[in-house]
Image (cartoon, rainbow, N blue to C red; front, side):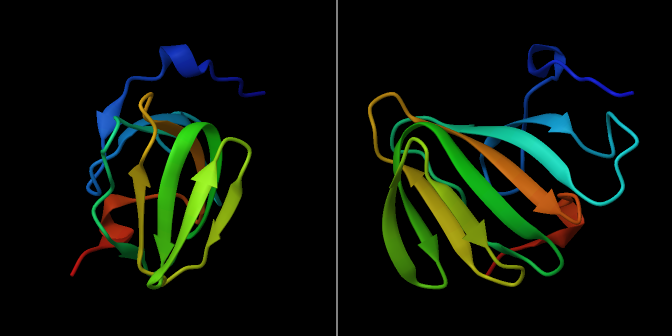
Length: 119
């Protein structure tokens, strides 16, 4: 049985510029097919526009408001919103609220820097 406490997971900055805590992935558990992380952006912060060739992603907004762009389409997002980012889709998220933005990110297959591509 694997149970990880988020507070015990060290934060790091991904290639896209968000601050991440890996909750469950192949670096801290015997995970093979997916990853779960908490991501955060300060007010006005944003991820660099990118895509993943292999990974399909879900974002789940825990706190704050932002703007999500997927494939050139923009939408406002807020606490409680779940967002599907298909593999191969260019995307970017921006924190619009004064308290920033905090969200869960699930990737299948698991997130990797090697599967993150920029312009």
